[in-house]
Every structure is written in C-alpha cells, then in structure tokens.
Length: 509
Image (cartoon, rainbow, N blue to C red; front, side):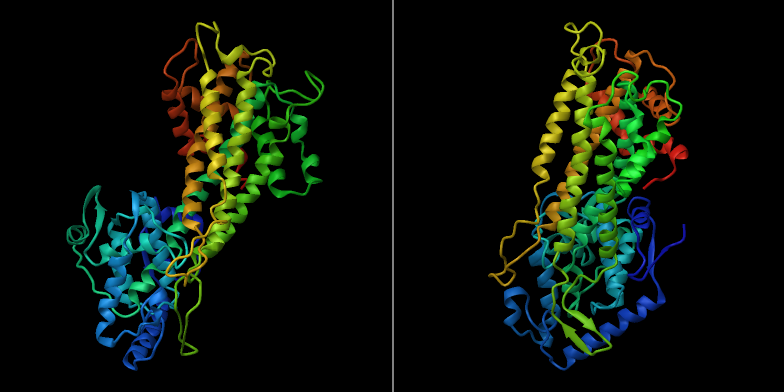
C-alpha cells in the first residue's frame, strides 16, 4: 500500500480509519516539509535574539511570567513533558493511539508550530513502525489541549514511558530500540508544540463517529426486521411523506428501509391489519433521520479539526510574528461530541422501545409472551429487554453534556476549559451500549419472524436474517442468552450485517 501523503489539508474520516485500523503508513509532502523548516528557522532566530515569546522563552500557564534563558530552553521542554504526564486509567485502544499520533503529525505539517522536521519524523517513524505509546484515557481538561495524554505520547519519543510494540508492552526505550530507532532530545518550543492540541479528543471522537455512522445503517436494518416481525405498515415510509418534511436524513432513512423491505410478504399496508403503527415504527424515519443528520454535521466538524492548527503559540512566518492565542481550546469538539452522544443514544432509545413491543404480548399482535413457547417454564427474551433498558438508561446519564462543565486550572490563568475529551470518551461508551441494544433488537426480531411463521422477507432483510441465523439458532427453550447476544453484537460492530445488505441499498449516508 502506498504511503498516505500528509500536508494538513485533506485528511478525511475514511482515510483516517485506513491509517489507524488498517495500519496505513504516512509521510509529509515536500511542501509541508518546507513549511515546517521555515517556521523552525523563525523560532531559532527568536531564541538567538533572546526575544520574549510565550512557550519559547517563557514558562507555561501561570508560569508564563517566568523568562527562560537560552541555556535552559532544552530542559524547559523536557520538564514540560515529564511533569505533564499525569494521565490515569486504562490505556487508550491501539487504533485511538494511532489516531492521536496521525492527527498530531498532520497538525504539525501545517508549519505553524515551529517544531523541527527531525522531531516530526520521529513521530512518523513510530506510527509507521507500529510503536504505540501507552496513553492513559483520563486526565485531560480538553483545554490547553489534551496536555496529559499527549505528554504520554511524547515520553516514548524520548525513550521514556511505555509502549506496545508487536503486541508486547515494554518500556519506551526498548520499543524504540526493537524498531531500530533512538530517542530524541527536544529543543525550544518543541514540547509545547507536541502536547498543545486537541488530538486525543478528536481521535477518540472520530473513531466513535465512524462506528456510529455504521451503527445508524445497521439500526435501519434492525428496524426493517422488526417491521416484518410486527407486520409493520410500510405506507408511513413512502417518499412523498418525507419529501414534504424536507429533512435530508429522514428522506434517506425512509428510502433505505423501503429498499431493504422490497418484496417482503411480512409487512402490511395501511388498513390491512390496523390503520397505523406505534411511533417506534411509524416515526422511525424521523428519529433515525435526525440521527443521520446529527452524524453528518459531526463528521463535517471533525474533518475540519483533523486538519486544523490547534497548538499555541502560533508561528506566522510571513508576518515574522508569534501569536499566543487559544486554538488548543477543545470547545468546538466538546460540543459536537456531546451532540453525537445524543444521536447515538436516540438510536438505542427507539430500538429498545421496538424490542419491548416484540416481547410484550399486549403489544406484539399475537406473538407469544417474551418470544418463547411454553412460557413460564421458559423465560425466553424477558431479561433481554431488562438488559436493553439498563443500557439505554445508562446512556441517558452519559448523554448529559460534558461541555457545560468547567473547572479553572493553572492558578485561574486557564479559567474556562472544555471537557471535550470526556465528551468523546462518553460518546464511545454510549456507542458500546447502543451497539448491544441494536443487536438485542435484531435477535428478538429474528425470533419473532420465525414464531410468526416466516414468509418471504425483503430483499435486504432476508440477507440480514440469514447472517443472524448462521450465527444463532432459533430458541425452542431457554439457554445462556448473553452468548447469542455477543454473537449478534459481533455482526453489528464488525459491519457484517450492513455489508451483506449494502449491495441492495448502496451507501445512503
């Protein structure tokens, strides 16, 4: 595979995933290298002139009032990294760590950070060689950048900290040596250039977003299966209803569902059995569609941030100036990841309500209670609904916006912070829960289809049903339920269900 060319301009979500999960390699364009070198020349000149500039010849945060000599400039940058490596908690997943490294490289390639090309190359070589720093998941306020977690990334560049290399956890120094690399030493401005940015929250949130988009698609298939299991009315999905509402995601969702249900003998038309369905079926295009538009908006903003300059101070070569600003502030990401949390939560909320209709004999239109024959002796899918209810309830707590909170730091110099990294991590947790709720609905819908006396299914739902039945058999009596839940969850999370249906519907996102 050819290396991805980075210049801080054109990185998109799909390529981001190819590099983080597909282990794509990267390099900078010649133009990016030239920009980096010019910015570094300005920093070196300012240091030689003893010019007072934040983070170059001063301390950080409240210590910005302290002037640092040329002789102490190297120690300043190293001290910054080791003192800021205060992260706690479980290590971030490998794909997220690769994303952090990739995004930092891409931001530095813009040539506004004043870092040496040799220092960026150390990070590029680590990414390409599969040296993945251990970065604890907690400890970032999401302003002044993701300081603590990014410091853990930089430790490994210096031969400190810990990393995973070829599946083995080891010291940063051992990881470098195993890959034929040597530690580097930072000089003026470089430590700050490496840790002052939003790359951790953006990497965590971008992975959650990518998976959320795939979950939205699979949730539409789950909806289709439930429509068949409950003899749902397809009239409410007809195009004109949605065109006159003018909401793009709603239009696309209804189109998607009609395509996968085409040819089904288990859905109904208005008035055949009943006049209308409950909201969790009839209003699904409106709800799923809103989630579609949520994720489309978040994707637009995330891709902007992937190519943004987010550190401080900014080196303006053409103007021969250094500006101390606030691009490290994570509020633009904090708010959109809080918004993403709502979108993912709502997919799970409406899914759980459909699941309830499947298992509840008062709502299911003739299906046996809890989708099991010989109820009483068997509990069937009773507790599946309990588990789904627990997950959506947990999501409601996690969906509370992190960005509305702020705690001042650095002696009140940094008196408003974003909590954006918390928002991104919560989006990932909500996604984990929502994926399992969708899997539970799919499991129940397939059971209900069989109990209903399976007839011909839709062009897309038939493929999804077959995939599920290859993994999980019909329930004729109670058995360990979570094994089957996990089997269907794997089909959901891996994208296999959507991939089986995609040739029929195309990519409606």
